[in-house]
Amino acid sequence: MRFRSFLGTRPFAAGSVAALAVLYLAMAFAEFVAPYAPTASFPGMTYHPPNVRLGLSGLTAREARVVNAVTWKYVLVKDLGHDVRLFAKGEPYRLLGLIPADRHLFGTGAGKYPVFLLGADSLGRDLFSRIVHGSRISLTIGFIATAISLFLAIAFGGCAGYFGGAADWSIMRFSEFFMLIPGLYLILFLRSLLSTNMDSGQMYMMITVILSLVGWPGSARTIRGLVHSIKREEFVLNARLEGIPAPVIIFRHIMPQTASLLIVSVALSVPGFIMSETTLSYLGLGIVDPAVSWGSLIKRDISTLSNLRNYPWLLSPVWMLLTVTLAFNFLGDALRDFYDPYHAVFPRFSLKRLARRLSNG
Image (cartoon, rainbow, N blue to C red; front, side):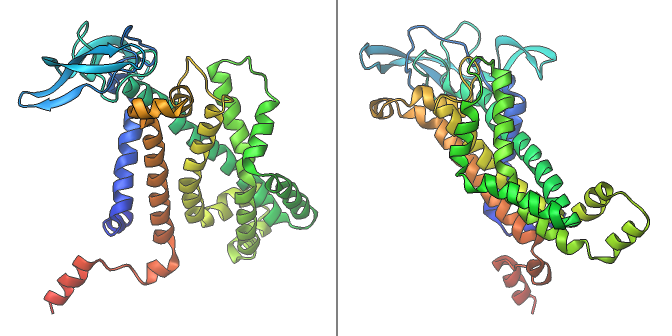
C-alpha cells in the first residue's frame, strides 16, 4: 500500500509498472494475443504494410495489392476491407500449453484477408505476432539470468563478507578477474566456446548461463560490503553463539536486511540482460530460426538501410526494447527512492498535496 501511494507521486514509474504488466500478460498469453503463429507465412505478402484502419464502422483490415515486385510497394484497395473483430476465430492452439482453443484477441476470421497490425516481414509473416511470441524469450531471459546471477552474488559475496580473511581475498580477486574483461567481449568469448549445433532450448539455457556468469561480480562486491558491516550486529552475534550454521545465518538472518538493495538490483539488472541477449542474437550468436526473439527479429529484418527506408515498421522490435528498458529503469529509480532512508524521513510532497494543505489552512 505504501509503495502504491508512493507511485502516485511518480507518474513515469506508475506508467512503467502498467506497461510492464501489459507486456508480461501478453507474453504469458501469447497464443491468444497474437492473431497468428510466429512461423505462419502468407505467400505473396512479402513486406506487406500495416493495413489496420479506423473508420466509421470500426477497425478494418484493408486489402492491398503489389504494384512493384522489386521494391515490394503496395497500394491499399479502395473500399475493400474486412472487419477486425475481438475474439475472432483463427488457428487452433493450446492456451498456456494446456487448454485447447481457437479464439484470438483480434483478427478477421479464419480464411479471410490477414490483419497486419505492424506489417509483415520478408517472408510474409505477421510482425506483431512474432514480436508477441518473441517476448517469451526476450522478457524471461532477463529474469532467469538475473535470478542465477543474484544467487551467485549472494553466495560468493555473502561468504566473502561473513568469513573474511583468505576467503574474502580469494573471492574478491576471482570476481575482479571477471570485472577486468569488458562484459561484451567476455560474453562473446564464452559463446564462441560453445557448439553451434544446438536446438533453441539448449541455446536459450546456454545464453542464460553465460549472462549469469558475467553479471554476478559487481553485485557480489556490493553484497560483500553490506554483509561485512551487518555481521557485527547483535542478532548475528547471537545466532553464531547459538551454533546456527553459517549458510543459515547468511541467507536467513543477514540477506533479509539487504532486501531493499536486492530488489533495486533486480529491477536494474533485468533490462541489461535483455539487451545482452539481443546483442548476441543480432550478431548471429544467439536465438535463431525457427525460434524467435526480439534480437533475432532485428537481425533478420533490419539488414540494410534501404529496408528501414522502405519498410519502417521493421523497427517495431527496437521500440519494444526501448520501452522495456526505460520502464525497468524508471521502476528501478522509484524503488531506489522508496527504500532510501532520506525519503522515509522526508517524504516527497506532490503539488496537489501541498495545494490541498494550503487550502485547508
